[in-house]
Amino acid sequence: MNRTQSITAAEHYFDSRAFHADLARRVAIPTESQNPDRLADLQRYLDDDLIPALKSLGFQCEVFPNPVATGGPFLIAERKEPGAALTLFSYGHGDVIRGLEPQWRAGITPWEMKEEGERIFGRGTADNKGQHTINLGALAAVLKAKGALGFNVKLLIEMGEEVGSIGLEAFCRQHKERLKADVFIASDGPRLAPDRPTIFLGSRGVMNFDLELNLRKGAHHSGNWGGLLADPGIILSHAIASITDERGAIRIPEWRPTTLTAAVRAALADCEVSGGNAEENEFAPTIDTDWGEPGLTPAERVFGWTSFSVLAMKVGNPENPVNAIAPRAWARCQLRFVVGIDGPDIVPALERHLAREGFADVKVSIPREGRMAATRLDPDSPWVRWAVKSITETTGTKPAILPNLGGSLPNDIFADLLGLPTIWVPHSYAACSQHAPNEHMLAPIAREGLQIMAGLFHDLGELKRAPA
Image (cartoon, rainbow, N blue to C red):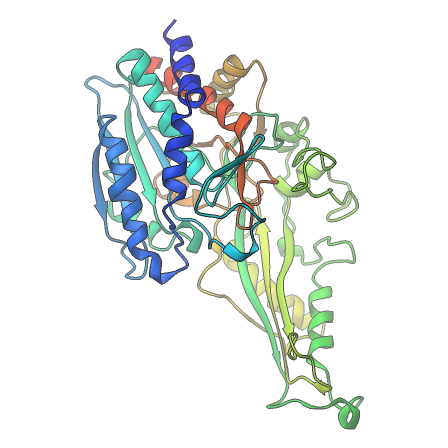
């Protein structure tokens, strides 16, 4: 009966619009971690909103400065229960990507939550204020129904995830003993499809790098010098094109994973990647079925393989082109990679490839931001089986099990540094426009997310030991 009561309390939190009020209040705080002028807002999000909410649930809260002077603060909130057998570690981030105010659709803005049908608009609704608001609401629902959780909680909120989780590794290393727990359960990223509950067990790694070719000091008239001077834009374009074939399949051997095993394929066999029906959802792109590694399903390409992208490229003056051969060309590129790829060898492997292809003059450099390692919990882990059983009982649907997210998160800090089995339960969907104008979450996913998390937290409180 307590399980049903916990889920009912979570549903009431949504249906009474208390969830909407909490999320609207949090969206209104412009926590842009990329904007130095918002540092006070990063602190305000913790002091004025999260800490009072957590204290009302019996948490002890402490805010810490970032070990990196330019980084946002961290919050550790702890709730202990006498005799509790297990400790949950959970995580969220209160910072958001830049608002991009002028680019939002007429009538909606990033800092004011607004509903249109099933969509709840506002910066942070999907990434990540809405997601940790769901999880906090589910904890409150279980407490309301049972009077206790039955487990201890250690919650970490960072305010710099959108700038590469600056200082997070150093902070967790400093507080490693304090952050000890039995299992990690948190929420970020999208579901496999809007209507299918999902768990993922790690994330692809990410490496951003710049390619640059400098041939001379200045530009020269294309009429007088065209055909006489090497064009850096053409050379750099060919260098980039050598990295994949014409359909995006990786050509660098060291970037091609060997870890798309039978177990991973089996986990992905019933996973259909979808952002929703494109005819019904203007935010959902259509998958290009002939792009990327041939012979793989869409799920295998995004969750089990490496992908290379050109994020930006510049030669000459794009805003005001002139009739001149540019002296320099530059591109910001990105590699998303899975467990099994040697992270430290990614750039050296690229340099070796460029030299073999005749592009040794193209220089590779790594920007400060944009580096995260790949992680993956075994899909056959007892904790995974436990979570799948709980979610199936709540929803009547077996969740999609993704060995790792297609995107990247600082999961290596939790999985490798803190040594935790990591289970992520996302409450968003792929076409949510996170990091873009018109970010939104879907109301049905939010409500079902509250049900799922209330069921998970109830079931965790019933365990007397970690699943064997």
